[in-house]
Length: 113
Image (cartoon, rainbow, N blue to C red; front, top):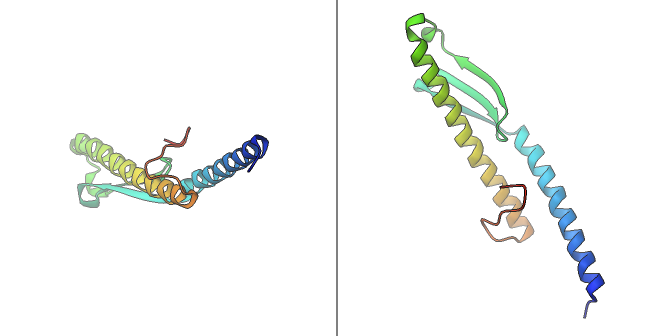
């Protein structure tokens, strides 16, 4: 039978491992790119799965003063599309890590949800 001290040490080691894996996951998410699109690809937004915006592309055909409101709406839609894709990638990565740690699906680690 393990002593209380051995159990505490094992729990601390497990917590350190989880913290390290979460740090690695955050770095990986910042390296994964997603692309949100709107208007049939006339507006594209590239972002990391962590949500950092890398670039915006607007088709030349939209660059007219009378198209300003349409462009603004499409950029907003493309950002939201990129954000949705980033969220999906983040959820996939977290489920993969949690599965590897033997944690139940949907378990929220503090600071990660």
